[in-house]
Image (cartoon, rainbow, N blue to C red; front, side, top):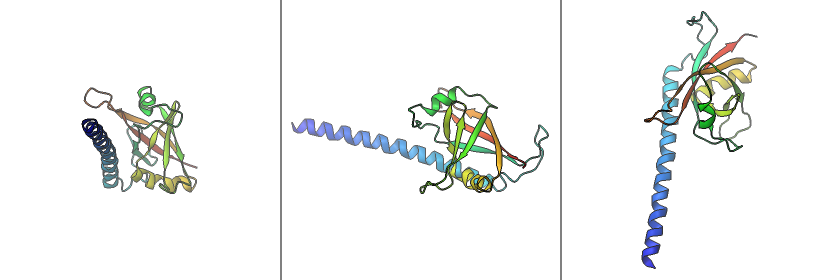
Length: 163
């Protein structure tokens, strides 16, 4: 009987360690993304230099986080992202009233939610949206989906609209 208890406790401890590892890895990824965004983000949406397409409106590339989560309707965001293509439009939905994260900006494709902006990007964009600013957003690129990096990671291109 003592052997069964010992095995059961070992299994529980192992499961707890694996869960802690996975949660820590995701938190580390989000922190790293935020750190990079802070480093290069001084004028993220305030730039007016001409892009390759000649558009001089303020623009930025922004990181999507939370792509490995499951939506409230049970759909896996990774499954949704797998069906999207570079250049597709996405909607940025400002979420208000979240005491834990007052600057949340959801990223929603034609097929459903694919994540939210990283905290650093949301902190930069939320005040602009709150003041009535309008943006156009599309998928700049999707990384991953390979044998060495199975999870998809999304970066979107955000352009400020006039008016």
